[in-house]
Image (tube, rainbow, N blue to C red; front, side, top):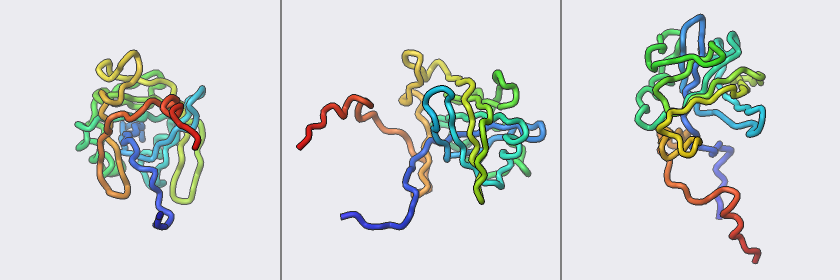
Length: 188
């Protein structure tokens, strides 16, 4: 029997992503786990749910660009650090080696497995949060994490975040093929 536990959000774990912005001409990074896929087809749209108090929001609004970087488990210290301190009082520009892609204003992390360069599409303003909707303009991946030209999560070893346990987690083994394993279902 199920037990009612309130109105808890249990959509965790989520991948830890590091959002890169330029704020007042300086590179800034923020650990953001509230990232969602809005549209899997063209245009490729994603969302970032970020508290209004975050320093990075200024850069996204100003430059209308940002990056979303997926770190591996071995970058847990840096990932947590850029979420602990604010860019309004701490210079986080040296935490990661950066590069700029086609948009020229969305700092990407050089030494992480996967990075996406995004152009701001829209902003949904909530009472306490800004939901930034971005269009993925380019995706960059290290050769070492690709299998057949596609990102291989077993090679990325992404860091995951769980709000209920307040822990970082790792990814397990695949358990089945999407759009295939369901063919085994038999009506009773």
